[in-house]
Length: 367
Figure 1: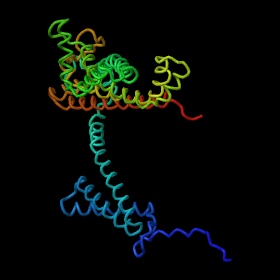
Figure 2: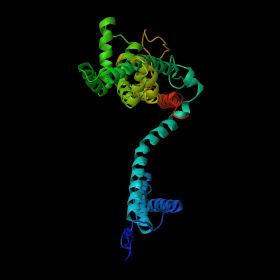
Figure 3: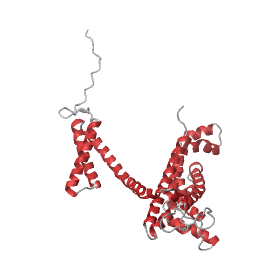
Figure 4: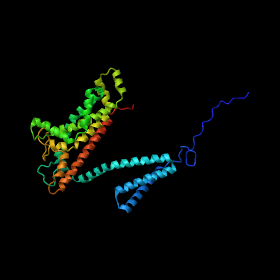
């Protein structure tokens, strides 16, 4: 008797797909970081030379030509060294990076322009003096800074509780009923209304009670509230929907009531995203000009009472410094740029505060 060989045949080797082979997906090699940086450096140098010789020096043109040369160079080199698949991947990565830098360019340009123009008036007088009795040089925006902080603080105090509770109702209690659908519809509509409409609504509302010509800080806060609430509702709603239902069900299984589950489980889990959304909403309204023009007005004096008389804010201060400068114009323009820089720094401080809140109050997943 002869033994029967029951051993399974070996699987066929994959075809070699390398150039010169029969189709293996293995690559020739890998580009080093030094090679990629060398391609980038050579592209920049060639881009500057070509642009300068053809059209004269232009940073934008040189950057565009350098980007095109880099994409061509990195694809060609990667195709030779690594193969077609890696070459396409590196080219797409280069395109995405280029688009990111293009999107970043306006932001960097604005920050640089405002900082370079406004830093000259960043002195003690600008932050401690008002414009009362000041003509020409000197003076400051202390009254405008305090007005902005007071009105924005009132707006936040009104908008954040309303927006968060509305979002909680939509996510936890609404169940797609008629009221939740109507609330969602009106939130979407309010998100896109022009800011001047909010100002006109607020001034018309207070005119019914105080008569025509009334200007107060609280009216501006109400106008900004109309703009801020939809942003808070939408961002908070999205963050609450990201909380896993398993957390709610585990809490209900232990006999915890719904309101306590929301306050002790759902909200702490979503607090990081909610804080970020609130910060974005504050940044959305802190620089509004049109609603405050018709609701708060302008003044050169200090007024810390939002329920009595006109108040000054940084956007209005910057606007009037540019629109109606005195003679000479330079001091007014310097104060305008300094006010704009102050606004940017306030927004940056708000974002930093949101990051700190997210860090310290977000749920800890590690042991």
